[in-house]
Length: 108
Image (tube, rainbow, N blue to C red; front, side, top):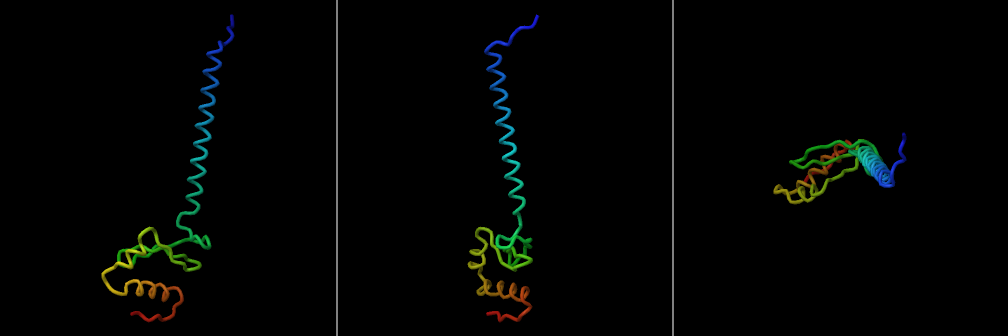
């Protein structure tokens, strides 16, 4: 003898299925967001090429391998500006320019 599911059983399974679908959608959204973040990690915001990290006086500066743009993380430019050695900011950019263009840049 087969019994017809009660209204409570149908309601229970409907709620359970809805919750499972919600969890699956949320997991898919998180996965898509993580893939999107990874596709931009260490990529130049201007041209999309890879960034390399250089350490200048304890401050890590990211530089594009294609357009040679310089990118600072939060607080890094301020660290260079507040460096106790006078002219460090000028010297850092002078070194970068020499590396990018091969030209001689005067240091202060």
